[in-house]
Length: 151
Ligand SMILES: [Zn+2]
Image 1 (cartoon, helix red, strand yellow):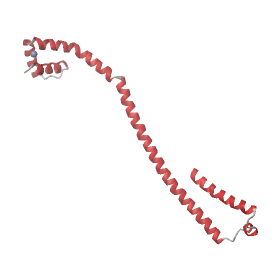
Image 2 (tube, helix red, strand yellow):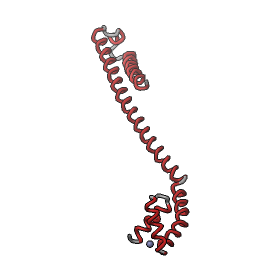
Image 3 (cartoon, helix red, strand yellow):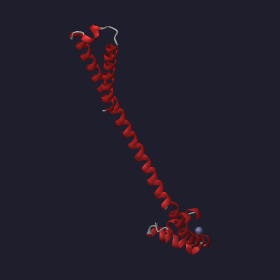
Image 4 (spheres, protein in one colour):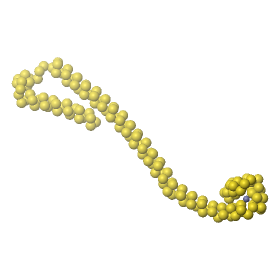
């Protein structure tokens, strides 16, 4: 075995991840190899510091970052659900509005066709009263539309 492999084994030994057999082999090697003994000493002193640094790095800021990512993801999903709902409501609302407007227009047309001419219109064709009546009718159509849209 080369020193690189021993060093890898020492690293795992310091982390407490070696098997009893590996421990035995390592113990025998360290008895004959000062370089690996030094490496193990260095590592034993370094490891806690490295672990501490890692904990600090992954510590509060890591948790906050993950939470922020999750919240961003959730709000993005929420906004998409809202957009979807809005789109569906808008389409349904528009369909409903069109249906109502068509129904209103159809009933108005049939009423115009069946009902006798309003007396005020036959009395004077271009009177102010007729214009007021027509304007009033326009207004009621608008009112119906407005009522449906704002519903
Ligand atoms: Zn060695």
